[in-house]
Length: 166
Image 1: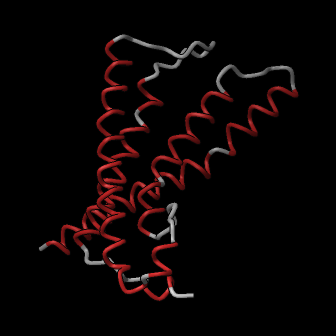
Image 2: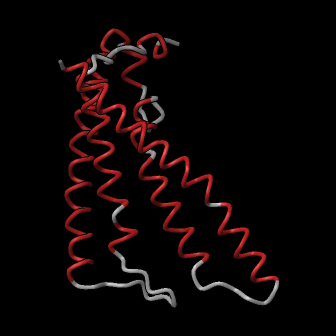
């Protein structure tokens, strides 16, 4: 049962990863458009702002994939000293990441809610409602929570014990 739930959570993380990759690939279009429009004497008011928000959203949505594939920041000193304890270090890291993701998701949700309730807009010509780009924060936290749960439930702890022995 727990492995089935883990696979489902990993699929959600995979979808968020696909969304992140799509956002990153599509970033070239507004940058090129803005550069060409500026050269022709018609600069955009939205080019920089939209690409900046998209870059942030893509990075936050990619959290789940980074965690799933072991590409998150990792301190390996204890793992090289105690390679047989890799399973327990993995569990500790995933539980810590789960708590961190929950804090980010919760605080980010309150942040988005505050901006939405108070109708806060970017102080730019475009005047983007700030709750839109800020939504990347709770989504990224949720991605970390879901992927951490998937790793904890899926029995992946200690799977890479050999990589810690050098």
